[in-house]
Length: 240
Image (tube, rainbow, N blue to C red; front, side):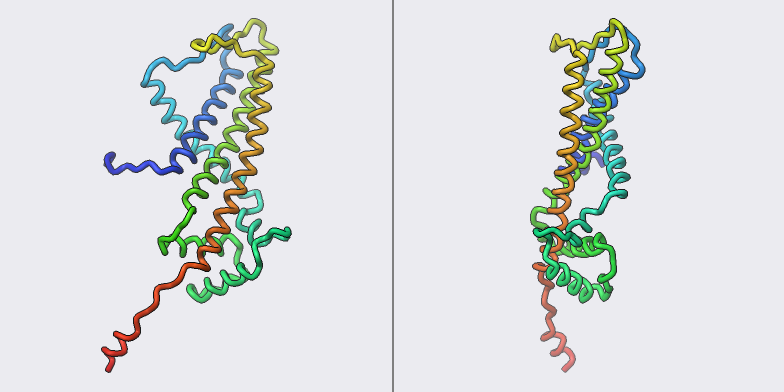
């Protein structure tokens, strides 16, 4: 039922906010491609339009995450970056070996040759089941936020650049923000495109960074979570 509907931080930061940026970028690209009028006025007048915009933005956020997932499959997984890194500040190999040994003890499965992502999933699942998740939720929703913004800002940069080209070749085309009384120029669109492109790169870096935080937190948490001790005394008495 609707009264049981819960909105998580990931719904807002992982889908809605990146979706607003993604939808705005799509709107700008649409203006550049399909509106040949001499004047375009941008404004949302009614509450109904705002509700429709936010709902569509939420869907656009899901689509941005879907695109990011497709790109992610072609990149080196964050878990592999953490576990198999050769840099000086790499995650200690001794802790990785300890995680594998403990996972094998608990699951009776040999994870020595398994992909790093599976070792992470086993560790993360154990931490979640223990209830001692620490800052896991923060890392997850911030990773999702920056991953979605990475794709959405690319769309914004593409849209601004395309509209700049449109204004350059279309004679007499005018883009106006009505309530702000602001005429958007080609130079301003170039500036917006450069800012969006730069922020997209920075969002990608932040997305990978929080993925590393998420992975290391799961591995360390797995080692520090203690299994509840089995009560053998009562069972021995029953057997007597």
